[in-house]
Image (cartoon, helix red, strand yellow):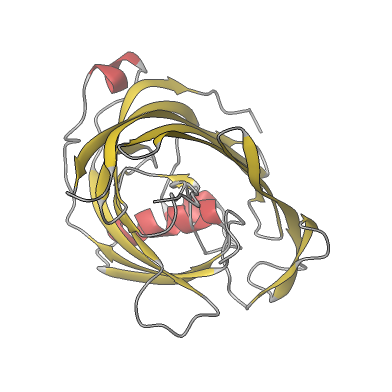
Amino acid sequence: MVFKERFIKFLLPFWCVNRSRIIAVFLGLGLMLTHPPAVLGVELESHRAHYTMDLLSAEAGSGVSGVSGAMVYSFNENCYSWSSETNVNLKVIYSDRGEVETIWSFASFEAKNGTAYSFQVRHLRNGSLVELFKGKVNRPAAGTATTVQYSSPNNLEVHLPSMTMFPVRHLMELISAGETGKRMFNRTVFDGASDDNPYRINAIIGNKRNKSRNFDDVFVSAGLKEASSRHFQMAFFPNNSKRAEPKFELGVVYRNDGIAEKIRQDFGDFVLELTPHRLELIDKPKC
């Protein structure tokens, strides 16, 4: 199996099915683009999380004999914007062709008022550049239809329909939907992490867990208090696709402050598990 991996911004502990690529999950997906965070009742925690990546299971015939890796996800809230960065280093060992190393990085900037977004994605396999995406979005008002301008690949343009959301706002609205008792949450989201963007994301929201199942030394050492969490099962459909089957699915358990507790990603013939081993809180600026 040759990866055309991506991790969806967006990092989130999740239960995920992705047949063709790794999705960087610490993204923060959202809407309510014209309203400040207080309106949503959701306060995201600025933080840096370090995750180990291990092979949870592999089907016979997959050829996968071992996996090791790490992911570091950073989220920062500023006075008028959010920024995030995801860095993944993954090594998959195949019984027939040895080790394949993937290095994937994603960085984004998102204006809180929903009018501006920029991103950069870099993907290396065994030291060779596989993909490079870089671009920005500017629109007169949140939710307005517009066109993404790419600087890499040159001259690439992607149309965003009206009410397309960017990642952080989507994450906030997703968590808020769970807090208000909603069971379904469907939105169109653009993050720039792949050439299939934007996606229609259909989410099924699980029951509230009043106590984090993974509230251990990692969270205590960072100075975090216990928080409720929920499981979010998300199906991703490329906006230009008419197929009934999603491109991939993500299952995520989020704390109500936006921190992902644990991650599982299912690639069909093998499953990876991501576990936090270090967490650092980042001070917010005084605005």
